[in-house]
Length: 204
Image 1 (cartoon, rainbow, N blue to C red):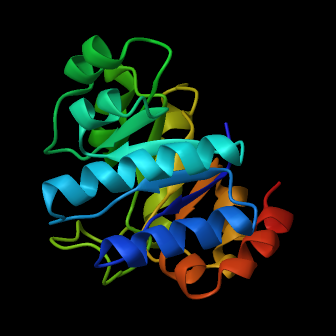
Image 2: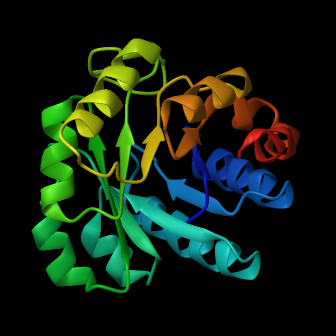
C-alpha cells in the first residue's frame, strides 16, 4: 500500500480536475476524491474522470464517503468517516477486492476500525486544518504517540495508520518515528504539486 495519499481539493469541477491532474503529473500514486457539497451529477463526473486518470497513471482511486458511487465508477475503494455508511455495509457492496479505509480520532475509534476490518485508518487531525468542517479534536504528535503506545501495551499490532489533518513535509520523519505508516496530504500538495517528490523521498 502506498504511504502517501492526496486528498483532492477544489470548489468546482474544473478546480478538482486540475488539482488531481497536477498531482498525478507529479507522481502521486494514491488519490482520494473528496468534494463535499458537490452537485451530484458533477461529483459522478469527477469520480468517473478521476478513476480513468488514476488507472492511466497506475494510481489508486478512492472515493470519499460514497460507497454506491465507488461501486458505480468501479473505483479502487472508498474512505468512510465515522458518521458515514458502516464498514460492514461497504464490504457487502464492494466485496473483498476493494480497499476500504476509515477515519478515526481516538484509540477507541482505532480499535473499532480494526474490528470492522478496515484496510487502513486515517487518524487525525494532526493539527488544525481549514479543509475540514466540524473538525475532530486535534491530536498533535502526543496524541499519535499515546495511541500507538496503547496498542503496543495491549500487544496489538498497529494497523496501517495514515496521519491526516494539516500534515506537512516536515512532519514525515517524526510521524514515522512514532510508528505511523503513512500520511494523507491535501493543502500542501494542492498549492505545490512538485512537493510530492520531496514527500516520497522523506518516506521510509
